[in-house]
Image (tube, rainbow, N blue to C red; front, side, top):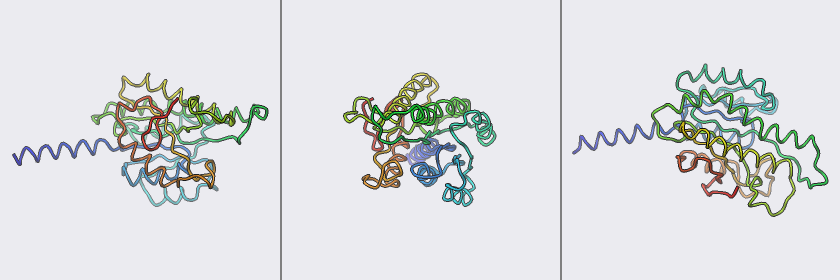
Length: 264
């Protein structure tokens, strides 16, 4: 019986190890929630490599220092609006991950317009929000899809240890939950992000790739402001704990940081 128990325990340990992503890609990692995602992913999952993108060195000191201190953090300079560069980014990921592929993609980079009402909306704000919040995540996921599909062939159960795409959305994207209006560019671009999340979840389901939209909560960041009830650490600790539990039942869902399902 002891031998059987020992074998069983080893199998459980193998499953636990497989459920942890070995390779993670995070956009907008130089500040705010993106930077805390890198820190908590490193601490919780201990991946072989975290690809962390940043746009401007002068605004990325903490991330650059973190990268210099951690050999498993690979920094990538990337403006997500420059979709012509995505092919080169994908080649960088392929060179580092090889046949194992990319387990977890977190499309975190985003922008938010001011609280604008209907009469204040401009084309420029609409364009910028959609380009960053909707178009960039779609095209970057497309570029990295070959690496994600490689990872989906691995033996781990469906989840972040196999293959998952996480789009950082917002409760302000919820059509069913909108009772105050305003913020047209941000709300509409994030609602569109939710739709592409649902689309991907349907298309990639057969490949065992889990795709979700995730609301990190109201957080004390440049967007959330000082009155927000959560710190970045509190938010991302809960987010990473949720990611560690993802399975096929979550595919195509719009989830809050604590696992609560939100209305589309």
